[in-house]
Image (cartoon, rainbow, N blue to C red; front, side):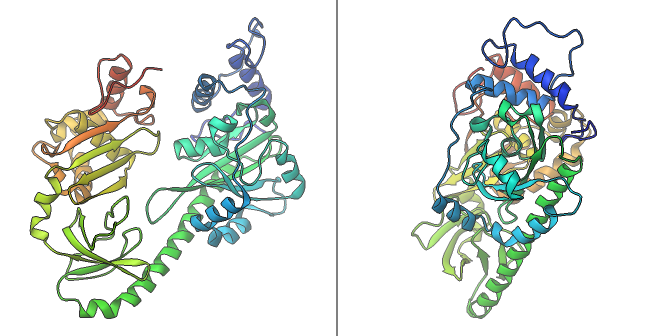
Length: 457
């Protein structure tokens, strides 16, 4: 692999010899892992591993994963693989991915793998000799390729960070993987925004070409576009089915698909998507939704007919006794859960909205736009950006978000679940207030709302 190969974040990856020396020196620092504890360093030390690689190695050392022995890879059976393939809906985009990524003359030999959100390999395509070689390290259908299972690798890092990434040669934690390079990118469900799969290209480290990371990230976006086209076609079918029924309905109504996307509506302003209850509708024909309050719901052709019953009472009903839970326990996957007397819903947050809600959860008395701008950007003048973000949040939080100052409703119970290690709290955030909170948690000088202190590493 040439030094021209670049990592996901644009930094150059050094040659395999430098990586191997860096690996040996880094892991030799722990007795019994990677080399003799008393081994002397070479006069000219190689460059240290990239920060994201170093962080991964440190986590795996704490977990006690042996870089020479690894552990037995967990697998799911053939029937489970087939079921997960069906649930993922990715079979429809495989022909486009295969034609884009495999079989071009002059390209280095690679394997195309698709893993589910738990890291299980659902599809594996490529030349038979290369697949036989991959079998030797357990890279086959049904195997679970998370970092905890098989050490630092492209699929595992993309799952944890939800960003396109590359792991080249001795950047792998397990020595048995050093002959390989893998590049991976997340694929998100266009209906829900949730991680749907990870797309991976793997091949011999000495042959993989520098453009593969860009190609893989582009292919992941292609998969999302194909899935979006499938979704739009499904919404069109639902709209056609619902038209006669909506013509007979008196009062406002809308028809949504199973993920809440609107197919048709009458008597209501356009709402692209409803936040549906996280646990489903249950058995009751009357449900509570944050946008409308109490609604009559009934199934309709793979979707739902929703008729608001009392829009005037929605705001009061939404904030009265509500429970707001901000789940930051999984790095890279912040989620908001809201529950009230009549039901609940969940929403996957953008990194910026996760930062805003964390600051508002910690400061229940509220923050002005200037104070939020200072905490998010270190610049109190950036109030226009802050107000725009809060306006977007209010679209689904409604009366749960007050202003003047900005704060979460006083009547709501607010809790925050943090990660196991304070430094992993919104780990990719550079917001000054978030960095200060991490330091305070690490020192035991702060706790997250509604829970015990975050354990120190």
